[in-house]
Amino acid sequence: MSLSGNLFRTSIGRKFLMAVTGFILIGFVTGHLVGNLQVFGHPDKINGYAHFLQSLGGALWAVRLVLLAAVMIHVWAAVTLTLDSRKARGTEGYDVRRWIRASVSSRYMRLSGLVVLAFIAYHLAHFTLGTVQTDNFKGQLAPYAMAADFHLLGFPVVAKGEAVADVYSMVFLGFANPWVSLFYVVAIGLLTVHLLHGFESMFQTIGWKSSTWAGWLRGVAVAFCLAYLAGNVAIPGLILSGAAKPAAGTTAAERLAAPTSTDPR
Amino acid sequence: MVAAGSPKTISVTLRVWRQAAPNQAGRFVDYPARDVSPNMSFLELLDVVNDQLTVTGEEPIAFAHDCREGICGTCSLVIDGKPHGPHQGVASCQTYLRSFSDGAVITVEPFRAQPFPVVRDLVTDRSAFDKIQQAGGYITARAGSAPDANAVPVPKADAELAMDAAQCIGCGACVAACKNASAMLFVAAKVSHLGLMPQGQPERDRRVLAMVNTADDLGFGSCTNQYECSAACPKLISHDFIARLNRDFIGATFRSGFAATPANTGGGAG
Image (cartoon, rainbow over all chains, first blue to last red; front, side, top):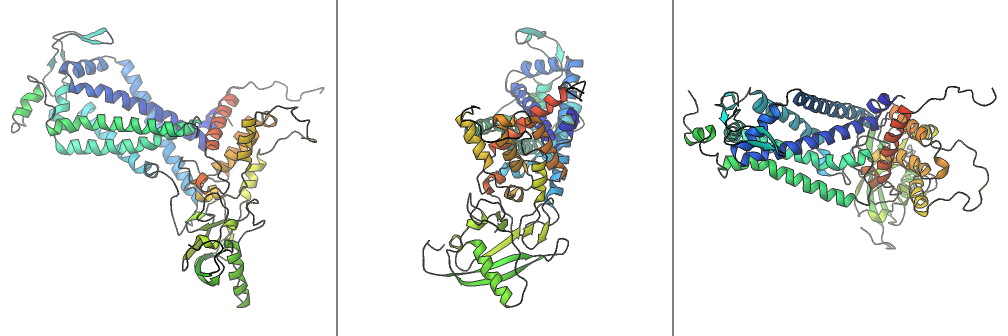
């Protein structure tokens, strides 16, 4: 069989595609979290960073297309493999069903995956397209004037005084809504459960795992997942609880100080 | 639980899957077994029940068995939801009644998987495994008589690992235990025990590609890395071999995808 036939048709080939796309997506969510944590710094940080990403133009779209392809291949492989496996199990099931040692996270990959997929759609509508919580969307908020020059890896990216989209206020205002925050926390919790199995699974599918270092890998996977969960829960958690307050002078600070005036006009 | 060597007898009820023929509907039937020795094997218990059934003129329970010492891979019962019964690394034939408590109701089912159709009662047709073996689970070259010792050096660790894989008795418990009815552990064991040996190298890529494709075509499922297979395996074959199988398969896929093809396949003095 041809290379593409072996990759896209055989069971191990599709598992390999799941592992590779899973690796890309783990890399993305990690980088995304690190970028997002800048919301706890000076508003210049996340606003300058967001402006830099938006200014990438074609490169930004290239990354977006790679991510979209990764999600699509990951989901396609999961669906086709699941259907094949259901067929393999046959029509007559066992009367007594029990698990011997399969981990809890491994048994709920479909559920956690589907919730994460729904979450991605909401998250894009929320912070990228602005079709939900329209009033808080960066395109609707007053532009933010940079307080200082913004550098990334030593390179000057945005100049002092330049007006950029106010991502900082958008995040603070968005997570001031308890339902939105709750959905984020639940979805991130399920993504963490998904990654608990996925992280190790990736190494097994690519063929690098062995019992010699499986215990160590498990430790790394658990530590990674806990750090990921903590970082992601911190953003809605600290904002909603009021532990993190928006910096004075920002749109978010003005609006949250007067909670009754939800209508900006 | 009854202690080993105990003179006491126990009574259990077997809840057995009865199915007269491949495409007929089956059902569970209860068979009480009273005052039986706790030191008889599970298969001996079925023999005792079958003796009673024969006396009363009923059809005895069909079940697969051969060596009854855990090395042939013929016995294939799912006992209380686990292939080969409650213990780790033990086949059905070496599961003893002392592992069950007095008065227990024990559910006995055949291995379930689409590629393993039920022939009758607890007997399934596992010839799908033979087809996977025929696809590449051998070495084509004539092995001849035993070579001189150390003529072909094999590292001790490789030899031991190959022996671990070669312990597979092909019973199919891995498929029965897997929620996806995947044959990965079986294929992994067969591919690895040859792939670790120098004699297995020339056909290593062809072997793994052919065996995995055949397993897929026969309708076995895929691996979701839950390792129920290795936990149910009567020979405790490690799922490390599945990682090895994955590595071999992916490597072979890319190597074969980019390999040059010979211009003249006639070869030799044609």
